[in-house]
Image (cartoon, rainbow, N blue to C red; front, side, top):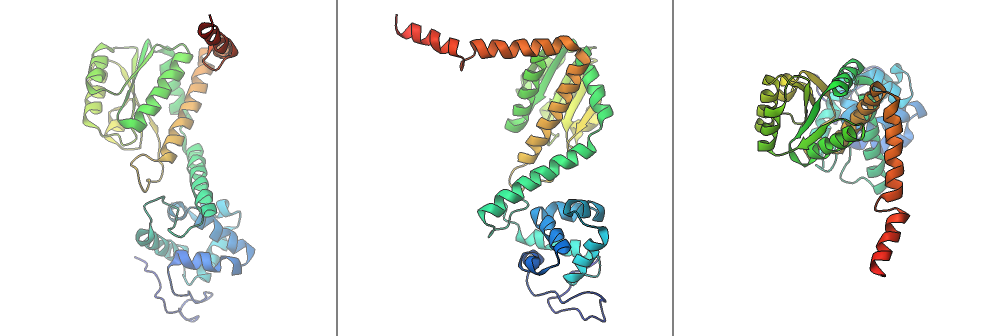
Length: 317
C-alpha cells in the first residue's frame, strides 16, 4: 500500500520530476499553493478542493474531465506536490480527509469561508447528479414505467421521514397521472396493504438504507401474493435483493445524516425521469388531464383569486 511522503521533501533523485511537498496537510497545501500553480494545474486543484471526497473515488479520466484538462496534467499536478503517482496522491488525500473532516459536510473544511461552503455544497450536489445521469439504467426505468402503466393498484411503502417524503411525492405524481395509488409508512398498514395486493399490482418500496425489518417483511409478503416489487434504494441492500426491479441510487455518504441532501435530490430526479416516461407510455390523454389539473388549481386553489373572493364574501355578509 502506498504511503504519504514524510514532511521532509523528497529528493529529485528519488522522485524525478517532483518538487518538495511543504509541511502540513495535503488539503492545506492544495489551498496554499493553488494561486502559484500554472493555470492547468490550478484548475485540477480547484476541482479537487470543490469535492475532495469525490476526487478520491474518481478515475484520472473523470478528474481530467471535471477540471477541463488532459490526463497527463493530473499526473504533473500530483508530482508537483511531491507524489510519484496519482495513486499515492489520492491515498494521501484520503488519509487527510479521514482526520480532517468536520462532520458538517463531506467537502467542507472547518475554516472554509461562506463562499467556499456554498460553492462546495453546490458542486458536490451537481457532481452527484452528473454521476446519476451517467449511471441511470434506462432499460430498468422503462420496465418500471411499463409495470406502473399496467398496474391495477400501486402501493408505496416507506420508512422514516426522508423515504416517506419521497414515497408521498411518488404517490401524488402517480395520482395525477390517473394511477390507482396509495402511500403508507406504518408497519401494520403496509402488511394490510401487502395482503390485499396480487398479480397485476405493484408494491413500490422506497428506502435508501434498505434494511428496515418491517418493510422487508411487507415486501416479502406482497411478493408472495403475486405483486411485483419495485425498490428505490442503494445497490446491494436487502431490499434490493428482494425486489423484482431495482432503481439504484448510489451517492457519497453524508457526513451528518444517513440520508442526506444529495440522496433526496437524486431520488427526486429519478422520480421525475420515471414519471415522464410513464406519462409517455400512457399517451396524449394524460397531458390533457395534467393541463386540466393545472387550470383547476389556478382557478379554485387556495392561492387563486376566486378562492380569495369567496373568503371575503363569507367574512362580509
